[in-house]
Length: 126
Image (cartoon, rainbow, N blue to C red):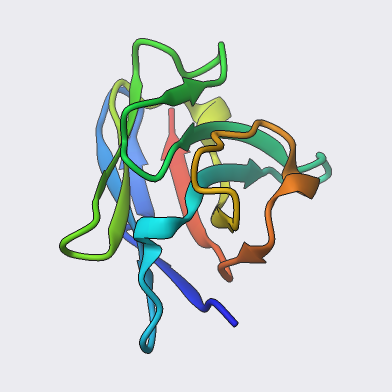
């Protein structure tokens, strides 16, 4: 069982930045997993934000965040990051990280991920 813990969320003004972190608890090593970030706003379905393969060599970003968000990982620290710049009010949501047993993958579909964190709230004020 992989347990994921997100951190770094909070309240920020439009145009500001936040960096989310996703760490594995216990003895889990994330280096073998493809990782993704998703978000869910109130009343909306969970949507894909970003994904990265186990090596970090392949990434994928949703069109809505391209040019503003960056996904990266540090396998030595067992952590995946989502750097969010130029935040907009429409980025307000609970952000979740997810892990896929397919380390080569950088999937956009939520059902392809095997493990999920509890989420961290990001609120962007106008």
